[in-house]
Length: 163
Image (cartoon, rainbow, N blue to C red; front, side):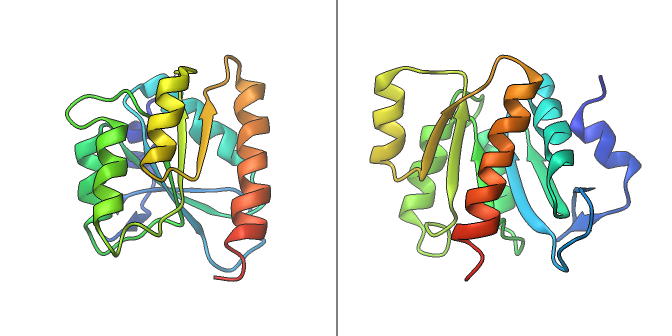
């Protein structure tokens, strides 16, 4: 399975200088921008593949750790949502949430924690740092498809439609 960074290299799409993956069919005139902060290449690939089921074009930018995610967030490019793993090297997901909370420009970006942890302490810590949603990563690909369809239905079709 190719990593998302290898797949991005095949595409000519870029956003603010960062490679991205244009995904989905173009039923909407503007791509939905997602920053995926995920250190596991296999999980990142599953998420990228599951986004193929979306009814809109997705501009997906992948950050392999929390530091890269913060670099993307401090660039001119702004995602519509941030999909954030908690357990990452360099800067972990909880530290990313704290940085978002401390930055007036970034704190309004909807942040969906998508992690392998089901620990009540991690759930509590994420919500204390103002994560909007917390999901445990599915074990199978069809679980990713269902979860990302739910995220599209709520965040792309409903919650952010009026913004």
